[in-house]
Length: 391
Image (cartoon, rainbow, N blue to C red; front, side, top):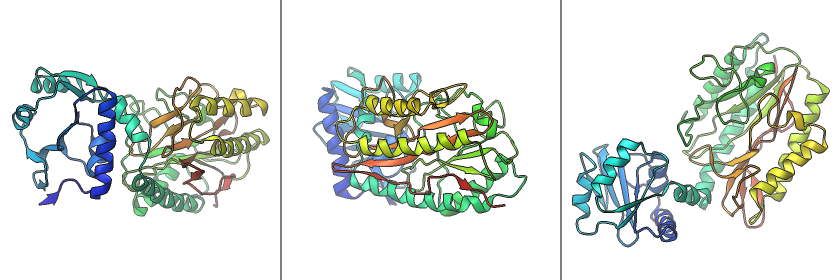
């Protein structure tokens, strides 16, 4: 048998206490956690089932699979309707459910299982809760950053003259997996899809995509229209690499730009501007800063450099310049012009001020930063200038 909650007891208590503060803020007396990312956040593992968290009372872990989990509060069930019987007379009056990520049919079934309880959407509260990382979470992200950096430093030696973007991506994926990358690219929501990351060569970077990513790409098939498309890497092209940084269940997000030989002066200027924006964001991302002000600063720096037409895309632009990262790649806060988010200690944010230059491709960097009370630390420390691919 295996212990269900494998977090350190003090860490688990901290996370559940923080969740109960969210319950108080929402005036709810219980929450039902169903989403894999949130189950992992609260227990350190993923299982098929539910976590019932009462404002006043112990946590109950309702488990369908696997059958070999044990521990305080673990209750084996076959179907959702079994939960109410276990809770007994302490049925909630106001129940928080993750309605942003639960299908309609499952949500309706769960509502019937807790018949009589008013249900509210608790998904935004869980996103707020997870946006401020604990020291233990930050350490996991730091370890992912160290291992991702090791992979990026090996990329120049993977290149062979005449390679396509796909061939290079396959080699990067191979060394990533051997370094310990889990392969899981966890994204919140059902309208964003990506496999292991994004490699963009030359003009393919200017191809619009239906997904809300900073960069696009045609992809290899209309069923997944994003990323590499078989373009041969040639002198003058840029090669933007933004691949999976999930080594611990918590991700870092890092982009670097490579060149096979040379690229245009305009591309070099835009790349340097990206580095300067990232460094400015690191300085400005302090507790209490407005996310939309950070975006405005980045946009102004691009405009002052005469690069606004290429900023965050050329033919199609992304509407943000940064995002929270952790268990999922798209967490709070969001660094966007209409964002209401306020930077807080414990936020882990990926800043990605990128440009698409016609005739060259995508340029710029992306780093993951941890916001502390006194300073903001960069967790992805591969070289930032253009990196030459070695044939």
